[in-house]
Structure formats: structure tokens, C-alpha cells
Length: 173
Image: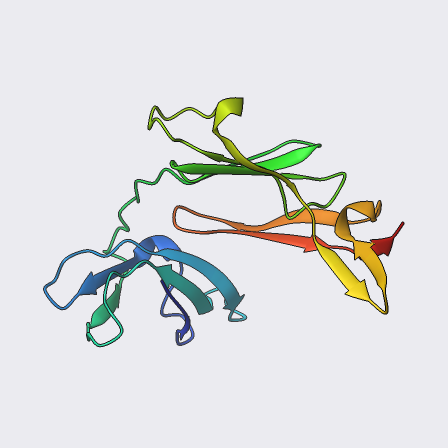
């Protein structure tokens, strides 16, 4: 996976929909973009781009970012999706699904693996549950799930990447 910031001059880019990423053969490359800042005229100043790449560490590949008002960005087909309720956040990648509670902070409340590749997740496919974070210091143990004031928020959702932010403390019993 590759991620990086790209700057634009004042007035050069008005919308993320006017971007296209291509490889050195001219093939379209799926990417996710997020506006980081804008110019006073509301044009885009900086974006964060994310893309998946299958190149090895010793390979080289060139990518070219094209932008113009005449360019229309292609939609990305993706299995990645996020569902949020007042109690939890569930992320599904197509093969793996995981949930995080908004009440008690376990690293993962549950992790499912679609073992039979039917596109559904049931209790027989749970591979991990209540994964706690534990910090030991001076002979005392502190647990993430004991913090009752912790918060879990969605920072970014896209077709290639989801970013969640958990904020809280380790608490002793």
C-alpha cells in the first residue's frame, strides 16, 4: 500500500472527481483521496492519496496523477464497508469482518473469517473475541476495557481504507 500527500497550486483543482491516476502503461489505477487543506478561493491545496500496489521491494513502477475539469474519476468497486450504530462499529472487508464496541474498549470485540466463502459471517466463523489490551507496570496490570470514558470515532471511510480512532486510558482493577 502506498500513501502520500500531493500539493496543488491555487485554483488548479476544484474537486476530487477531476483526478485520475494511471500507471506507466496508461492503465487506470484505483485510489482513495482525502482533502487535507484548501486555498482561500476554496480550491484544493493538499490531498492525501492512498493506493494498493502489488510491486515488490526491488521493482520500480511509475504512476501519473492527471487532473482537469474534463476528467471524471472512475468509481472503485470494493467489498470494504463500515456500519456504525450507537453501540458499535463493524468493518467488513469481504473476507474478514470485525467489530469494535463503543462501550468497552477491546482491540476487537469480535473477528470473523468467512471460512466457507459464502459472503456471510455467523458465530461459527468467529476466530477471536474480546481482544483486550493489557499494560503491566511495576507488577500491576492495566486494562483497556475498564475505561468507561473511552471514545471510538470514524476518521475516514473509503473504498480502499477505513481509519478508526480509539481514545482512552488503561485502568487497573
